[in-house]
Length: 519
Ligand code: HXC
Image 1: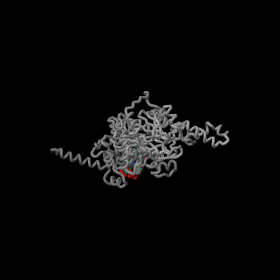
Image 2: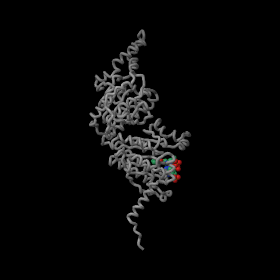
Image 3: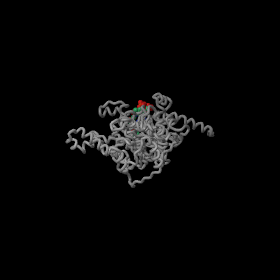
Image 4: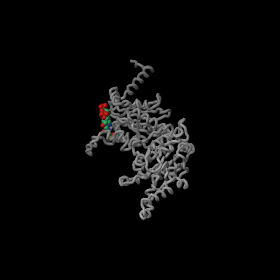
């Protein structure tokens, strides 16, 4: 009996059919269900993220080797995770996108191996890694093999950390230990249809008796406003993907490169209006974003953790085409004070910029570190120290502009000269002092004020005397702690100029295994 030989054409036809079948994931009904929830499918997310036609899939035909609980008979297209490479705005990335239609996107041994292979590809080839999460967590049927697989994802997350940008997009469930992979990455983008938690509502009910909904426990707004776990909230998958694309545009491919310089026609010119945003005198608030929008090209500012610890603003923009990370006090929220959470947020961002060679522009209007028992007991000393540590360790260009208040330890913490700022500019309204004039006068001249015929008048006189002496930028400039006192209208020009000048900055630190920064 002669065996029928299938022609090349026939084989290709079979291959294409097999591919198409696998690409249907968990089948039409499950795909429809996913779409009905207003979500994209795993493959649609990949297509939306990457430049058209650039996706090169890896591992479409991979299969797990598990035999327990009927896994040998289970249909597991692509092992429940779409992996491969492609380009975003012309630059290559490695990615993984969990397919919830295949056994809930659950992560078994081979599923995680596929993810890790992409991560190692990113590491070896110096490209960003993007992981789209939509999964019921460890694949229960595979027992500890799935745990082991996820352990390898965590390990790879840490290997990649600080070498290539890692972005997590959370589009569905991300529960239990699985939530620790995003936590190990640089940026977490969560959609309003996604939930992240270590223990879900039913377990919490059993253990603590508390009733809580998934949204309240681990929805996108919860993690944006309360926990600080995510960096961006998106209404849906498409918006999350746009954020990821934009974020990548500010970053280099890896820590050996500088961020890309964008062509721009945004004018770098004197700005006659910027100075009027900041009210003279210490008391009135204003929105620091109005200053930022005027400093960055085309008012284009990608704010990170916009609704968390809002007394500090962090985010990315460009000045004359060059990426900058902006760290700025927000005087309209608690007068721009540095507290536990804003120190965590600010220092983390400084470290992120430093890891990826993004120069930092620091805009200062800070009354101090937050006083109070709750802050002291919460460890403001430990948390506040993170700002000092982050800036002092930073070797990227540091450009600091003092707009108004810069008091005490918080002045030091906001990238002062002594912590390594390369350029420090002050507006004429800057008050660089050990503390506010009112507090200072009350302490230093207490006896004189108490003994005066008119203590209130004496107090005002002493406040004015202290302010005239110390609460100006001139003393700081005379000591070289400020390079120049500038007309606010010149600020964008000065920053653009400094960025050009500092583009080749090289700063070496003593060799060590790693520092012991406060955590
Ligand atoms: C295997 C799973 C699974 C899992 C879901 N599925 N999670 N299969 N392992 N972990 C399967 C379901 O059986 C179902 O299969 C399909 O995926 C869709 O799940 P549904 O429950 O129908 O979907 P939905 O109602 O949307 O609920 C989603 C869910 C729920 C909230 C994620 O499935 C769930 O609670 N899953 C278990 C979560 C969990 O406890 N995971 C382990 C945590 S331990 P069919 O065939 O019906 O379509 C852990 C340790 C950390 O994660 C290790 C790091 C990963």
